[in-house]
Image 1 (tube, helix red, strand yellow):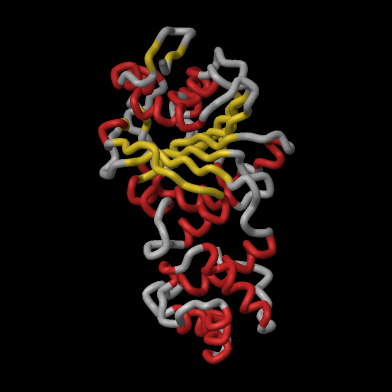
Image 2 (image 1 turned 30 degrees about the vertical axis):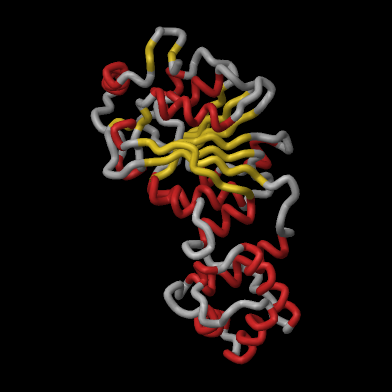
Length: 297
């Protein structure tokens, strides 16, 4: 149960939550920061089950809010690093986690968190209820980190979850990023009523299991993203046109890349699988293309 052991409070109880927030003068959570606090025990249990936690593990939780997930994690693992950017709710988080020595609270933007510094090579899992406004950026931040997590379990907007698990035909830069890292699976759908205040959309819990062996090298990942950024910049255009225009490469050269990769030039980028991008990168490099040093954000 999501209990504050010191006071015996159920942190999924809306009445308890309102009282807790009121004590710190918080009438409304900051919508600008995507603050929708989890109050569903069922959703909480789905996240915990998907994380497959062991007592000796470390967990990074971003968007910790009032600590409802934090205390559940802290009762199961050796170390929890809880990150929260909202200065108003930080005192609440510090109170609800005060009796859990496993918890370290970090106040600040999750995009400023450098896992290699926080965990110094020790494996960790990312378990989080990600703010809606920054979900895609947050996922890529940790997937592409020098020390990525050993497992990711995230609560995200349902539409974003659908994009994360999309197959070729509906792929996006987000789904490509996820599939470079691991295999995504939607494990639960969560209604808007599971949050306080309720958002306008439903959510979902997604588990991303890293591959046992990386499918791409760091250099290949850089090259794939250089190509994909160019293609998705005009995602409704045929891929041969968008690549030529965005990379400033002659159309006949791009067609040679695509032919070498056995990719139909008239396809849109969302039709391509990770294997397609790997073949395209190989063909482009074989024709002398050099990926840019810096990728667009």
